[in-house]
Image 1 (tube, helix red, strand yellow):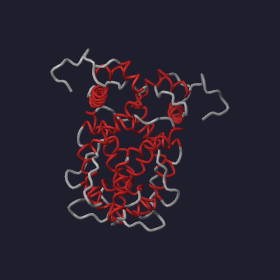
Image 2 (cartoon, rainbow over the protein chains, first blue to last red):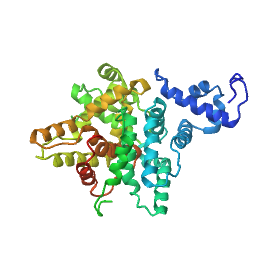
Image 3 (tube, each protein chain N blue to C red):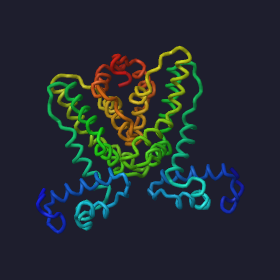
Image 4 (cartoon, one colour):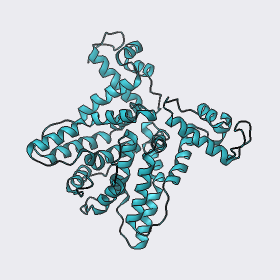
Amino acid sequence: MTPNQPTARIRKSPEQVRTAVHQAVIDLLCDPEGEDLNIPAIAQRAGVNHTSVYRRWGSLDTLLADMVTTRLERVSPLNDTGTLRGDLLAWAQASAASIRTPEGRALVRAVILSMPNSAQAQDERAQHFRRRMDSIEQIRQRATARGENPPPFEQILDQLIAPFYLRAIFGIDLPATGYPELLVDRLLSTTDGPATT
Amino acid sequence: MTPNQPTARIRKSPEQVRTAVHQAVIDLLCDPEGEDLNIPAIAQRAGVNHTSVYRRWGSLDTLLADMVTTRLERVSPLNDTGTLRGDLLAWAQASAASIRTPEGRALVRAVILSMPNSAQAQDERAQHFRRRMDSIEQIRQRATARGENPPPFEQILDQLIAPFYLRAIFGIDLPATGYPELLVDRLLSTTDGPATT
């Protein structure tokens, strides 16, 4: 970024445009005035021409999906902690830290807004979501490679991912302390019968 | 309802207007063409004048909230089964049956669309959601009255409600069989340490 230069009328690099546009989306979603989220408003706040936003992303859905993917990667680092429990706890701690911020909750709302909305698009929504959960699949694969026995993806979905998302979506505060540990311990101590997993 | 009469230009009772308008919202949300959800479109599909919709509900948010409350009550009957496990299972089975239908998933999207969207409105969103979870509170109260020891509301939220909502929102299929039992059994077999509940 170039803090010494005015943002308008300076030709930004593609990466600078991307960063400015993503930040503008977050700012609009966090805006207490609740301004409508649309490409002209985003472009104006980002200080870029709206035609270049349309040219690059095509639609608001695509822009939101791109932003969400980029930001979620940033808040969900994939460092190998050496154990399944450590990796899951790192994911849960990063998620908890994120959704305690207005920006993090705005990001979850953006995930939902970025999804195809028609009833017919259910499979597409599921695929989008699954791709965003790549970091969980990588944690599972590392655990298997270590000889650990990770829970099935759907169990992690129900017991770890769902509580964070639900609380972010509905604005329900997380318990002040120990919440990542609570959810991870519940997940890893669950022993479902063989017929149900 | 009056199937033998044309719907237009017949003066509907307030309850008929309400039913027609609620159904129009569901139809629009299930429409594969993904038409925008707004009061004129809803009124047209319901065969009522849009001014009477504005007069009665004031805004789309209020209309959606009214519809969601009415419909959720219908899909979440509160019959006393005699045990905590039975009551939770009845709630879970009704939820599973509901979100297997396009109408049920549309209802969950309507819950989200009906919530105040600005970042500042987080507390308001949480209160809305909590009111919609009244049936869970009633299940807890009945259990306490029987001398059973129900889990705290937040644990039911994380382990039972969140998985259903997340799957409905993101279009992730439920396991074909045994899912309500699986979630209820997990919930009731969880023994968190005393410091974390």
